[in-house]
Image (cartoon, rainbow, N blue to C red; front, side, top):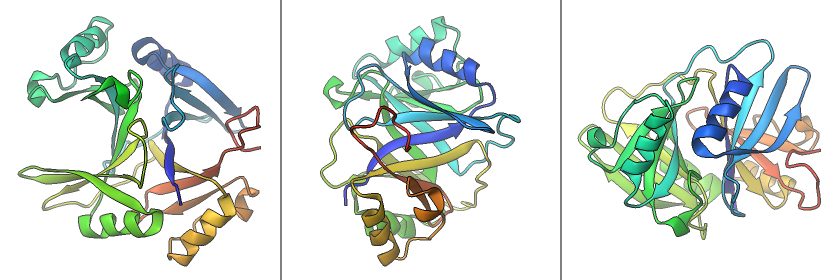
Length: 265
């Protein structure tokens, strides 16, 4: 089935400010842009983005930015070389990035900063062979039922459980398609013990998976009883959307290797 994670979309209030921020601090470059009547979408990523590397999609609605961050959406995580977390975090601080959670406060294992809209960005240590500097390592979303979520992504998308972290008050589960490369983005499911009901908000957009054949992939999802949210026909057979058990939107897209655009056309 494949289902490589292609990109993660989030909404921003000032597109040019966000493009400048990601370009200056993470070295992201614009990969492609789609201008519509009411919104603009921009794909971003490191210069040397691998074939299975995930992009960041920024969406700016022309009538304004997101109104609510919500807490169902967690963060994206970006990679720095193992052993250099403190150096890269200090570099961001020297560049004027907001000091949100420094490495010391996170036991030296990771750190967090925020972008201009308050989207949280985790910085994680990885072997350089696992992906380009600042490339997206994983996207975290919160789920209300860990067992249901793990089963859903296994059944619908054939994802494998690749890692787990248990703490006193929560558990993190990492998932990827079978056979995915180290550079590909993982999905992190966070389950908080106790009160775990969340609001989606509108700042978080969606995950997107890449299909070899859009309609065949969609038919498989329907066979597996995935929600029929926006089928390919309703999207001019250019993409489609389903939703997971917690209403996180998941786009399915088919890339045309001969197209001049990364966006469907």
